[in-house]
Image (cartoon, rainbow, N blue to C red):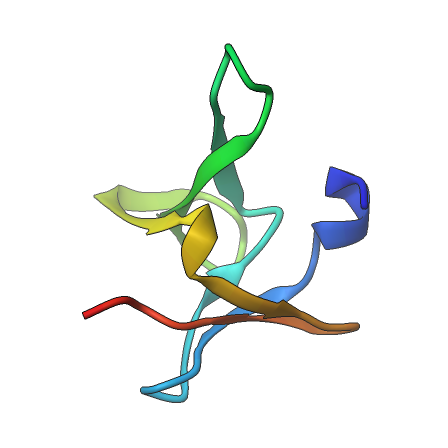
Length: 78
C-alpha cells in the first residue's frame, strides 16, 4: 500500500468512537534504518487547512488496528 492510498482516510479511535483526524493532514515518522513507519502525527488544522496551534497527537503505527476503504481504526494500548 502506498501513502497516497492512505491519504484522505479518517482516523477513528475504536474504543472512544472519536474522530482523530484525516490522514493527509498528518505527518508520518519513518525509521531511517528500517524504512518502516514508526508513528502518525496528527496536527490540529482548521477546515480551511491552516494550522490552529502547536497541539499535535502522536499515534504509534502498531496501534493501527484496521485500514479500511474509508477509515483507519486505532486501538490505543493501555
